[in-house]
Structure formats: structure tokens, C-alpha cells
Length: 521
Image (cartoon, rainbow, N blue to C red; front, side, top):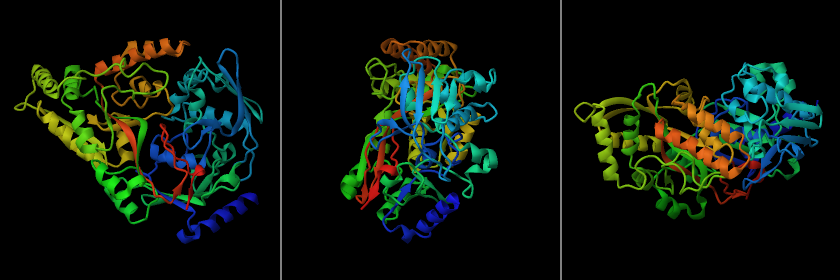
């Protein structure tokens, strides 16, 4: 009965756009979500939505500070390897209590090899998580145990300084066991979905909009100001800008490149640029381009300062390392490994790139032909055009190919590309969230793995001295950069237009801007 009452209440709030009055937040969201299941999500655009509907043991403030979520408190064992979480009194949106058993079920679900969750590796700090996920150990060996409804014990393989922050990531969030068991893969459909967060699903019109409405069963519902949030999967930043100008959007996902001065003049404080923990890069399929010197030449030929200064033009920083500067638990930016050509004039880098290509048998008269793939975006297109022109100078003939984000990233994970555009936003504030992409997981699109890197990464995981750990991780990055299986191009900044009607928007390095903390004038 309670479930029917809650659904009826949600429908009453969301019968029409006017029913929200000023209480619905309209957000540009970049791309169409492929799923609403936290265990199968892998994009920022999915996190933006799912993060309004679900919550982990830990969560974040508007500024990104880690705070208790569905766990009201926790303790840590003296050896730093065992966390004991104490659950708060919270309920699923259908009125069912949220328990520690729900988290045990969920962590075992995402790590189950039969689930085939591509992001499961994020949870490998948990004791025996990798062994279970790899199919060499059963679930009973996993270091996760609900000792009663209110107590969850998680054992780790080693001391993990970022583990609490990791629990704010959607891979660790609980899904409702009673609903998943009943409906299987259909559990996220509108008529079935049950959530733990501040908002619940109201409608989903693919390629048009997705709307969530306030969840009255949320434990902190009394402090949630908005009635709902509407997300729009707008991949073209120019179209998104037009809709913001027209008053159809309260926030944009991004802005067109190279328009900093105009956007600042037109929108003033509504145009927000802030640091973001992410790297824009090009992975190279090393099965196609096997010669490391060709890959090195491709990196040397890219004039990153032209891209950040004339194409993106909104404060992005040219990237010569894969891990963004300023990240926690790492060496200083000055000591960080970098690709060849850093600090040298572009003319010298270009000359060296030509020499390497000629030594490999390629030139303008005998070019290397390749396909460069990117997901649909005016900015990605402009960058691809610029880089293809830079590569043409050294004897590379590039065919550009674009497709929607969902298809693009599926092909990257399947290795169906030669060179491609990709981006990575840190899932937590530690270099391993980037360095894992150079190791053995589905997001190592190049499929290139250096055995010494793997050994060093394992050594770092068992190193308790953070300074020593950072130095070992820097060696991991150097080996990856020297292989040129990925070409870092620039470090992200958040570029949003945020209406002055929006209250509670705060910049934070990790990026999520949860509507739970917002309101509208």
C-alpha cells in the first residue's frame, strides 16, 4: 500500500512541467544513459542520473567532502584493513528497510563473474574481490559480511587510503535485492524500480529526456528542496547552448570550445569554469599500430597548446602525463613522468616525429592510413580535425569517424578501433583510478600491458608508506607513457552554464553536482 501511495504522490507532482512550478531543475546531460543499474553504469552522464536515485555507505557534500551516507558511522581496525559500518534507519522507496544484508548482496552481485560488470575492478581493494570476480573463489571468501541488519564488515587486502571515498562510487552502491530477484534485468523499468536516494524515476523518453521526482521515503527527504530533475541527453554543445539561452535549461553539461570570452561577456557569473579530475586522451590499438616509435611520433606531432588555446579555449591544461596534477597520494607534478617532447619547442618535436615515421617507412608520399573514431560532439570533432592535420605533416592520413557515445565506448571496450578519442574522470582522488587504465581491465582500451607495470602496481598496493607508494606508482605511469598506448592531450576543467536561479551549486574536483543539495529561486 505504501508503494502505491508513494508512486501516486510522485505522479501527482510530475503530471506536467507546470506542476513543478519552479521546483524542477532542467539539466543538459551530454549523452543517453545506457542503463540505470549502478552495477552496469560506466559514464559520467549515467552517474549524474543514478547518483540522484541511489546512495552508498558514504556520500558527498555539495563541495565533494566525503560524509556518511546510508551508513551513519564506521570504525576501522588497528591494522587499517577492516571497516565496520553501522547502518542508519533508512528505507527503499517502497518502504522496505535498507539493511547491511542489501549491501552484502549487492557487492557480491557486482563482483560475481556471471554479472560481467565492467567496472567491478574498482572494488578489488576488498579482500578476495579479484579472486571472486575472476572465478577462482566463491562468494563465501569475499571480505564482505553483514553480521546483522545494521552491521556490515568489509575486510580489505591491504591498507587503502582512498577506500571511504571509493564507497561514494556507484559500483559500491546497494541495489534492492527483493526487486532484483523478482524482476531480473527488468528491475530498473519505471513500473519496477525501487531506489534509496533523494529522487526516484518518473519518466524516461529515450533520446529526449529522463525525469526523476522527489522520493518521500528518502531518509533526509525533509531537507530536499527540489521537486524533481529533468535530464536531457544533448550531445551537441551548440544545441545545448541555444537551449540555455532560450531558458529551457538551468544547467548545461558543457559549453562549446573556444568561446570563453564571449560566454563570460554574455553570461557573467553564470558561466563557471573549475578544475576537474580528468584526462582527455587518445588510446591507440597496439594490435594495429605495433611499432612503439610510430605511436611516439603520433604523440610528438600533437601541438597540445594549440588545442587548449585555440580549440577548447576554456582553461584546459595541456597534458604530458596521464595522471592529472594535484591528485592526492602522488608525487609532485614536477617529479611526475611525462611523454617525450615535454618542454621542447613544437618545431623540434615535429622534426623528431617526421624522423621516426620515415625510419618506419612512412612519409607524405607513402602515408600510414588509419581511422580516428570519436563520440559525437562538436568539440571532439574540432580536436580530431586539428590532430589529423598535425599527423598529416608526418605522413599519417586520417579518416574521421563519429558515432553516439554508447556505441563508441562499446567499440572501444571490444577493441574495435585503430585510434580513438576517450576521456576519464577520476572515480576517487588517488592516482590508481587512472593507472588502472594501463593495467588489466576493460577500460585499458589499447589492450597493452607491460608485465613490469603489473608487478609494480601489486607492490604499491602492499606499501603502507604513502611517499614510497607514490614513487612506485610513478614508475607504473612511466612504463605506460613510454609504451605510448595512450596519448594524453589535456586535463579537464568543468565548464558549465548555471542559471542564476539555481541555488546550491558548488565547484568540486570530483564533479558530481547532486540535486539533493540544490534549490531554485
